[in-house]
Length: 332
Image (tube, rainbow, N blue to C red; front, side, top):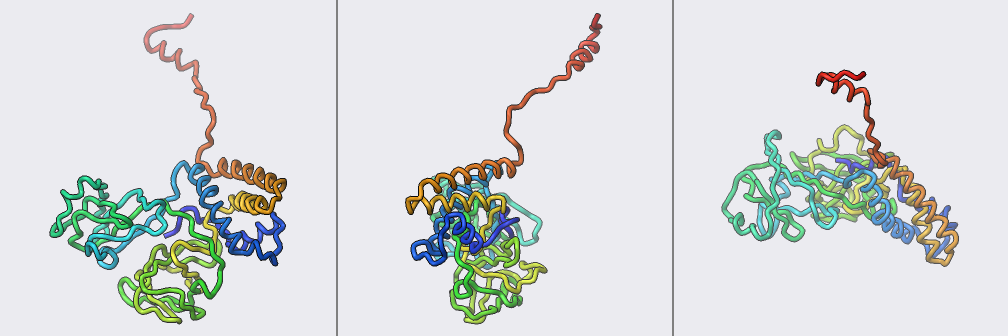
């Protein structure tokens, strides 16, 4: 699955280079390292660019996540009836929950069960086709518990990941993938690394422009070795794309900016303004702020599916004459 805002994107390294150019920050600066710049850029993406995308699109940045009932719908509290909410769901909220039966045809949109009414559904022995769901902490609980295999489809607003450097020691680079079962895939690393453990939730990102996410929210299974690991997803999920060079990152991080390229100038100027203000360069910081606002206004208008303006009702005066003629009135 791909995030709907990821059609055109750029790398974190390119963002750092752009910000250094605008703010005149040398690469040898010990105060403004790449990590410091990326941290400031994250705040801009969350509070500035994300809001702009939502307003321009007249809606939210929505993502789909599908969890197999037979493999992942389990927890210590209520086995086979709960799953973890998506790690990047804003404020742990979901837009909708759908149960897709094992035949792949029958879909049931689940109804939210409020806390006050959960006791009426909370029977440990009841099983069947789920009709409702409740949010319990960071988990989603189904009512009743599924009596057969299927898939839970969650629609939610996804937060932009934290930007991280594209380093081989921190990210996994895929050499090849091989299906090892109906719902498992072995990923072999191009360079040995040991940054993942069993149970980690990861995303697989294409390393070629536009850096689309290929897999979202996969869990790391057994075994985990320096040269490879197992993901709890079917190999067919990767499709026919070449996986060589793809990046495997922990969910919540990414070496890419997954927003349209049209926002690149606004994000760069706003990040540079925040950094220049820290060192007391208020004049240039204000200039970059103004540039960012101008870019943002232009992009929001361009991305919006409709331009908001005053509507003028057009009336064809001849239509009144035709209507009067049908009623038997003839103008003189």
